[in-house]
Amino acid sequence: MMTPLRPSTSALSSPQRRCHLLLMLNLPGYTVTPETLGCLNGVDDDTVRQDIADTGQEIERYHRLRIAPRQDGSYRIEGSALDNRLCLLHWLRRALRICPHFVADQFTPAVKTVLKHSATAKALYDDTNLHALVNLCARRMERQFDARDTQFLRIYLQYCLMQCQLGLVPDFTQHQRDWTRDRPEYHAASDIIRHWRRRVNAPPPDDEHLFLAVLFMMLRIPHPQRDAHREDVRLRRAVYDIITRFRHLSGMRFSDEQGLSNQLYIHLAQALNRSVFRIGIDNSLPDEIHRLYPKLMRTTREALLAFEHRFALRFSEEELGLVAVIFGAWLMQENALHEKQVLLLTGNNPQLEQQLERQIRELTLLPLNIKHLTLHTFQHQGAPGEVALVITPYPTTLPLFSPPLVHATPPLEEQQQQRIRQILES
Image (cartoon, rainbow, N blue to C red; front, side, top):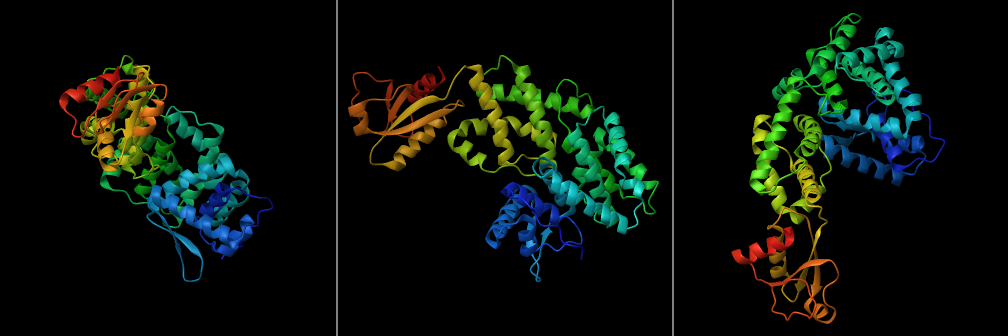
């Protein structure tokens, strides 16, 4: 067992403590217990337990990993080597932003110690050599890494080398293999593999080559004008087809389709990688978008069907929601609109009112802000300002000054639907 990490001498935020926890769990030879965590972060047992629970929930949501207790009271990460490496990729970059001293003083020296004890040639993890190797890869990919990404890559490549020396190599599905080998990053990663092979007895397996390519893919910032690889051209064509399909389904046009295309290209290039390698994103969005914008979500899903078939995948509801948000934002910008204000007058039948609200939201792709007001209050105070439409399933008289009022009970008649849609989209 290695010597425990030194305790912290300053108060730490919750994100900093959680980064410490995640990085420690990725260091072989360290026994991570509530006691060592409390000593390291300078917090009590309750805070330690909460940090473990919060970190566990996050890595399970985004990477299908689990922080599992052992019989001796310590903790370990359970899950595939690929998911674990992709998880650390994210967390190490976060740690370099919010707790760089821990990375420099604790994590990196610990990785180098493992490499030294495994008799790995020092030239492989020497910072100067790694810096030159990162620059070589950048030139191969016609990119320029900033100082923070260069620092990250030096550290992370040492970690990957350590994992490789310990025999902890990620496994890939056939789809992931084909996807990675078709990318220019795969050829850049071959420079690292050649460098490693010259100095180790057992050559790194091909799956290590694949992962190094994935590493560069995850760091890539797509550029709609400069990206020229055949896969980039393929994606641009697919984005054009999505916009054409969305326009056909919605009956709405975009005056600046190039601007929309550029934004979708940047987003989908990253979303494709997340989907292929099963990296999760925030899951709080889809339910809200489904509830507020059901027609927008449905139209977006239909517009993406051919795209998903072309790339042999299916986007999660979370990824679908983000694409829907992009289309929704451009629709608002196109029509110079804010959310239309709709007032739903309520009475004594909440189920009927909910059915009516759902049908109103199904009528348009544009965002709506539907507020509720009782019939009694409406009769005495009228409608608030900026309301575009008042609708209710209950008979009521119209005040002297009021926005258009529609009395309707589900299901809405075709004529009512047309009138409401005209008001909302005008």
